[in-house]
Structures are given as structure tokens and as C-alpha cells.
Amino acid sequence: MYKVLIVEPQEFALKALLNLPIWGIGEDGFVCTETATNGEEALTLLQTKEFDLVLTEINLSIFDGLQLLKQVYKDNEPPLIVFISDIVSFTYAREGFIYGAFDYLPKPLNRETMLALFQRATEKLEKQKKHLSIRSDASMEHRTFLAKGQIQALINRFTHKDETVPEMFRNMMMTIYHSKTSSQPSDILANKLFVTITVGIFEKHDWLPLYLPQNFHKQFDYPVLHDSNDFIEYYMRKFTCLFQLFCQLNPDFQDETLIKIHQYILQHPEEDLKLTMIASKFYMNHSYLSNLFSKKSSIHYSQLVTIVKMKRAEYLLNYTVLPVIDIAYRLGYKDIHYFTQIYKKTIGKSPTEYNREAYYYSEYTI
Image 1 (cartoon, rainbow, N blue to C red):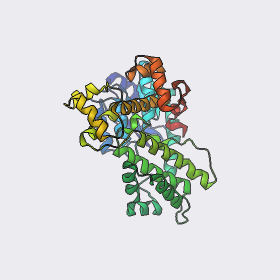
Image 2: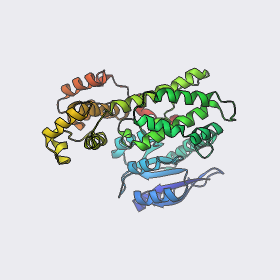
Image 3: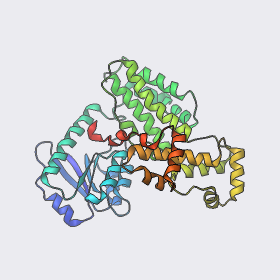
Image 4: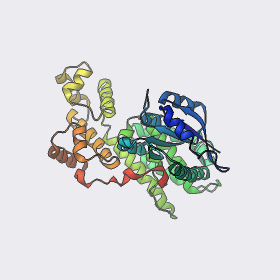
């Protein structure tokens, strides 16, 4: 039996769902073992008990469904998360796919919809069992890497933008992939290593999900590859993409105050980041702050803000359904033509040339 947690603040909606003739059907059916009415209750249950599937309303008190999703996906083996809500919240719910949501179901729910969901969830859960967990069943090679501290060393070098990081990553992947001492397929071992490294990087730099999907490590967009060089190159492209983005968003600073300001900018790319506003927030004179950037940074303040905002724009263009004009306004650009000009100059292509295909990656497509 698969265990289900339902998070529903409305009592009548919860009763209606529980009364549907869908529970405990077959040997591998789904059973609701716990319920919660808000995000805090749900998180407590998820931290103390095991579930295979979570059905959660988006609009929750204390913190909402998206915040709950982000918290859950910090775990190595999170349950499948399904949003349930009214059609008005559809766009908001779709953004949950970026963070790893399994599905979205509009209310009211019925037997046919739920049974179809259970079928997809069963297939996904079975697939997860076959792939094994990343850490609980780590391979000999994987444990060796962990024991030697190479993974942590790579993450630390990544943080310091060490130019040897990509080659270090390649060597680790080649060692894992060509190892003959494990019973597990090479592609599974390579993926485990990749996921462990990228999850570690995302945990250390919590602003990264604003610029890349939080489930970046789960986006299996490669075809079946039989050539080891092609397989390693696939992971190299993904890792290099992450490393280049990190370097672009992290110029060099020689002042602790500038480092704090930089972190604030990375975490709030959609706010008003004018120099006067930031100077006021950090209790500084704006002229002094401008001079400080000139003397203690490898980049001017205005250049930093532009890069951060355009990288956030690139993310929104690729992974949400927001139109270009809404993204421009969201980032503080009221002149769409000026926004388009700055975007093309910074990113290298017009915002109308973006590729939204990445947005449609969701767990059930894997």
C-alpha cells in the first residue's frame, strides 16, 4: 500500500475526497494515513513520518503549498507532490513544476481523475524503486568519493570559482562510469554522483533556484546513449551550464559589506535595486557605496544589477508562462523596448527567441 498525506484546510473538501471510492483498491493501492489543515502541520508530519504521495491545496495558512514543496524537496527521497486547487490558481500551480511537483489537479476532484493520478503515481514510484535511492544504497565507488572528501572538495572549489572545477568533475564522472567493481549500471552511478554534487551546490547557495529550476538535477532530457563519451559529455554540459551561471552571477569582491549586498541582490532580483535604495537599506551614503564598488569590486554596481535581473528574466522566460511584458514589469522595466534591448545585449538574444520547452519538464515525463 502507498501512504498518502492530504493537506486540505476546508473540512468539506477533505471529507469529499476521503469519501471517494478510490482508497485501498488492490494490493498496491493508496491509503490516506494522515491529514493536515495548514503548511506547518504538513511539514511536521513529513519530517516525522513517511509518505509516498502528498495531495496538497496550494492556498494554505502559515505557508503555502509552494513553500511546502520547496521544504520537502530538501530531502533526498521526497514523496510525490500533487497540487489540488481551483482553476483560478492554475498558473501559480504550474510554477510548482519548476520545483519538482508531480502533478496539478483542479477542483472538484472525482473518482476518474484520482484513479488516473494513482496510475501515474504508481508507475513513477515503481520507477524510483528500480533506480534506487542516492544515499541509502550508495555504491562502493560513490562511498569512496564521499570518504575521500572529493565531492565536498569539488563543491568548495565550485564556490570559489576555481577554473579546474569542470575538469575535476569530468575526472570523477569518468572514474565512476568506467568502474568495473559495481553491480549497478554505469549510467545510474554517474547520475547519483551528479545529483549528489548539484544538490550540495543548491543547498549551499540557496538563491540558485531563482535562476535555475530547483529540480535541475532531475531533468532527464537525454536520449538512450550507449557511447560512454556521449554520456559523460551530457553531464558535462549540464554541470558547465551551472558553473558558468554561478560565475556570471558572482563577480569578485574585496569587502565584507559588498559581499552582503551582493547576496541580498541575488536573493531579491525582482525588487527595486536602485543604488539609492540599497544604500538606504544598508545605512550607507549612495555616493560612498558607488565608490566602494569601484574600488573593491570587479564590476560596477549598475552592471551587477543588470546581469542579475537579466538572468532572472531568462529563467522566467524559460520556465514560466509569463509574457515578456509582464516579466519586464516584474523586474522593474516599464519600457518594454528598453528591456528587450538590455536583455539582448546581456544574454545575446532577444527575449522572443527563448525556449519554453524546459518549462514543461515534470516528473511524469521522466
